[in-house]
Length: 169
Image 1 (cartoon, one colour):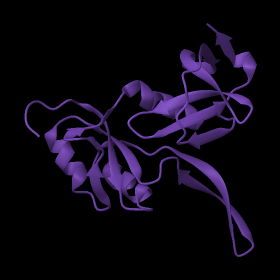
Image 2 (cartoon, rainbow, N blue to C red; image 1 turned 90 degrees about the vertical axis):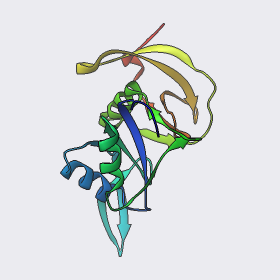
Image 3 (cartoon, rainbow, N blue to C red; image 1 turned 120 degrees about the vertical axis):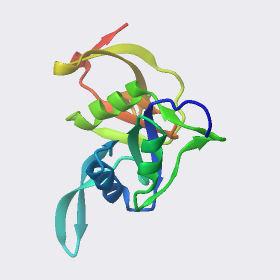
Image 4 (cartoon, rainbow, N blue to C red; image 1 turned 180 degrees about the vertical axis):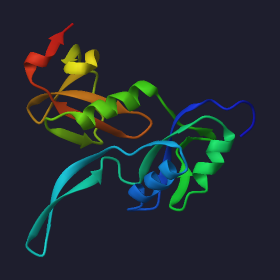
C-alpha cells in the first residue's frame, strides 16, 4: 500500500458471529464504524425474542481517514481483513452507506438478496426528513421494491415502499 491514502468507507471482513464485537471495539477506539442490522424474531426452547441481526454477516463498515486508522482498525480482535479488488482496497461510496442507513431506518419490509438484478425504473423517493432521493424501482417476488445495490458486496437491499412515497421520473 503505497502512495496517498483515499479517505472513505471501507469494509472489514470479520470472524463469523463477531460483527457486533468488532463494531463495538471500533467505536471504543473513537472510529466511525457502521453495522447495518435489523430486528428479527428468533425462537429457541419455546421462547421467542427479537434480536438485532447484521444485514451482511461477517462485514462491518469503517470510515478511514489515513493509514494510521487502517492499521488501528486491523488491530481489533475479530477483524480478519479488508475487502479488496485484487491489491486495491474496496472503497464504498458514501451514497451507498447513506442509502443503507435509510433502508435500515425504513419501517416497511426489508429484504437482502444476492441475486443480480437488471436496471430498474428511475424514481424519486419522498420520505420525511430525508427529502427527495433518486432511486431505482424493480420487481421482486411480484412486488415493486426500491433497490439499494451494496457494491462492493454481492448483495442488494430491497425495500417495499408505499406507492404514494414514489414519484416516477
